[in-house]
Every structure is written in structure tokens, then in C-alpha cells.
Image (cartoon, rainbow, N blue to C red):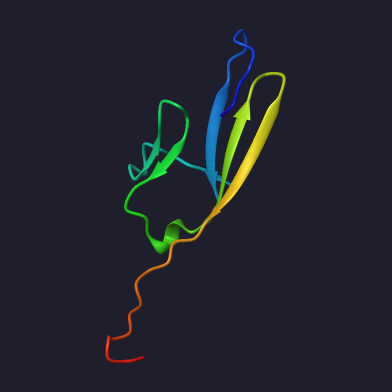
Length: 80
């Protein structure tokens, strides 16, 4: 949760692998009212570092997390 002086405009941006997430282009990525990030129907391509960047005209802060999405094995069940 990012908190800033109420007189300052607080902006929250989300990045995936250092690229700004375009929520209009990628509807599986949702920025909620509380500014949290939700990813629906994850795929292995969603694996990587995610950065939350909070900023005002006076200050900025970042927090990073790594998401690992593992797919199902493609080996037949009889192979062990």
C-alpha cells in the first residue's frame, strides 16, 4: 500500500520485466481500485519480475516481486 500526502497526486504504475503494463492492451492484467495487480489465466509467458512504482512530484518508491508460472508437463502419464 502506497500512502502519500493528500495534497499530492499519487500515481501507481505496474511493470513486467521493466516494461510498463498496458492494461487496455492486455485485459488479463487488471489494476484494482486499491492499485493491486491481478493476472487472470496466467501462462508461462507471465513469468518474470513485476515492479510496482508509486510516485508523486516529490518522491518515488518501487517494490519488486518475481512470479514463476509452471505449465503442466507435456510427458504422457505412462512415462515416469
